[in-house]
Amino acid sequence: MPRDTGEWLAAAVVAVAVAGLLAQSAVAAWTAAVQAWPTLAVLVGAGVLCAAGRTVGSARAARARAANLARLRLTLGEVDAMSDAQFEFALRDLLVRDGWTARRVGRQGDQAADVIGRHPETGRIVIQAKHTKVRGKVGSQVMYQVKGTAGPVHGADVAVVVTNGGFTRDAKRWGEQHQVHWIDRDRLRTWAEAGTPLRDLLGLHRRTRRSSPLRISRAVIRR
Image 1 (cartoon, rainbow, N blue to C red):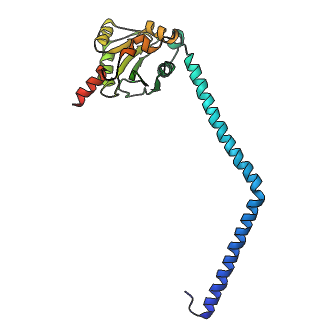
Image 2: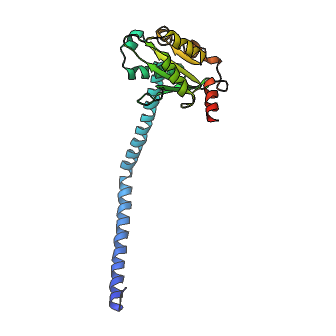
Image 3: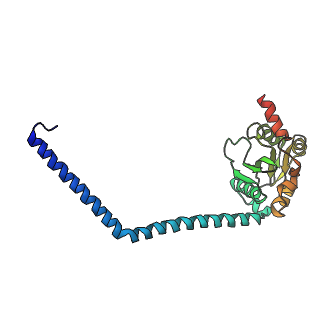
């Protein structure tokens, strides 16, 4: 704090000078803004147009993708040439084509779920993909794993194992007895190549979430 009259006068002079500088700066800023407002308006307008263009472009891209997926057809030859990951993404796209919302989740430790989807009428679906380049056969062990995790772990109403190969007789019988659907090479051709919707292929339109055995088993385990 100032200690005498001289210091108080000096402080007052400094305060007046600072106030004058601030006032000059404000006037200069206002003058610059007034002079530059056409440029600023152009920049703001360009930003708005750019954002609108991106939104429209994203919407068009989404519609184009949906239209492409609606026409999606995959031959067995194309499926056979895929990698394991590509096969999983292909199954996801087939679900989307048929009206499901779906995502690929397959990775190490996925607990027998490579694709998870949802349908407003059918509920939640879990798909385990088994891609083979030698047309091998899926055994019962895979069906056990899917049954054990589809409902309790993933909350699924429908569980499906899909392969471009085949299934052993025991695997098919066990799946049919325990509500684990299977899609072998012939069924995959009908689904992916002929374009038959999955719900029609497996009769899923008759299933409801409340009556799903997978959901029931999950509730029993919780108790």
